[in-house]
Image (tube, rainbow, N blue to C red):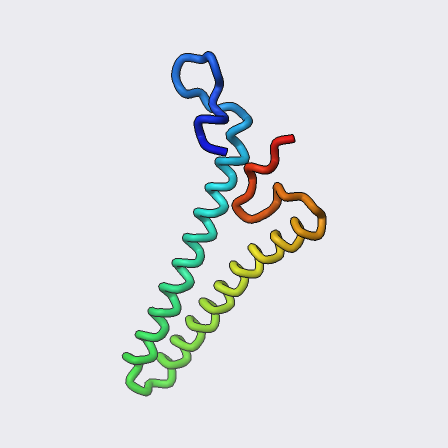
Length: 107
């Protein structure tokens, strides 16, 4: 589905209808997952820089290790969330749930 398909027909201007909700939700979810993934990768890079600049100080090394651990856990949670939704869509046979596949929701 593209944006122009869900706009009201015969109305002056581009007026969104409720048919646009799946498209808006899809773009929000994809954007949020992308942003979360980028943030996790940035934190992984920053923890590596912290490790390099720690100079052997135990406190700084421990802080960098915690940052790296939490960033990796966050990245795994992001990937698992997407994977779980796709598994549920496959098992239930509802193509509408597939990641970035909300255009299949129309009956």
